[in-house]
Amino acid sequence: MTLYDQPAGKPRTQLKSGKTDAHGNLVASYKITRNAVLSTAFTGDYRYAPRTVTTTATVTPTTRTQTQWPLSTTGIGSTTYQVFYKSEVNMGFNVQVTPRQDGGCTSVFVEHYHSGSWHQVTSKSCVPLYADGWYGYGRSLKLFTSNDRYRIRAHYTPPAKGAQTGSTWTRWTYLTVRPGNPS
Image (cartoon, rainbow, N blue to C red; front, side, top):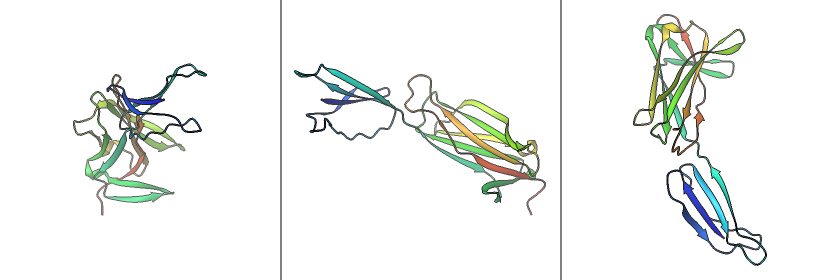
């Protein structure tokens, strides 16, 4: 039996070849860093015909988010909210995706809590990441209703061709905007 791997965009390589144990297992270790096709090939014997079995392993990229310029935090229920003030002018939200892939993009979604549920108020669709894997989203604080609750998150979409990873969502970041200046 022979075990193979083929990472996205790379040729197929042999991981291990040998006889199986008494339970029919042949084990190899392999660190997956991008989407890969893993296969096992059995050459056949006097009882069984040759057979190859494949599976695809999809790697989820790592995402990191960062809110720029909140002055404090507050708890509302069991949720922590970043606190901004209208006098600060803008709110910044940064997203980093690792590994970054040419042709991949991120979308940012902002939701407003009112009438008992979350409602999307704006989005920025499929914009390319910077060369360092970051994307910076800014929004004017005057567009937010004072003392209301908001949340923001991003979605990463890999390139349509030659993707090395799958897509992923960031966690929600919760925020509220206070009127006036911080005291």
